[in-house]
Image (cartoon, rainbow, N blue to C red):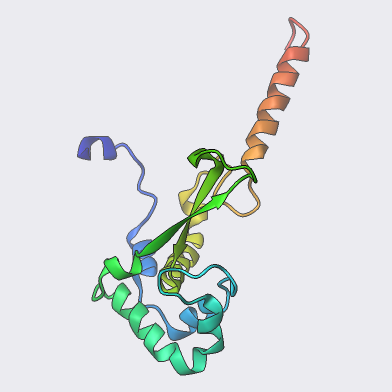
Length: 164
């Protein structure tokens, strides 16, 4: 594996690692809490983001403490990873399991930590994702590649023989 990885250009430098793993500020957590979907389905903790938003003044100390414990490696992942799987019907007349769509209902603590990590990663995406890759970047869509490929084939199909 080390030999194979030696041919891969290192995209995340030590400075990037430091920014990803730096301590989370209380302000950073508050911003994330208030950007979570307030009325999304409750997870295994039986709370919605609206609960945390409406009681932020009273409960922020405990929430921030829990997030700090996670980033400092002092809390277990088992509780955070607890997720309820719910089957949502795709159609009215249900005849089999394939007519359901499973969704995971994560607890708010998990969503909070995931959003903090996502926000930090977004700052590095331009350095990590190639300019030719069309997904995972704001303003880029995979459909762009389909259109470019279609245009290339259209050009080649209509190209006159000979010449340039």
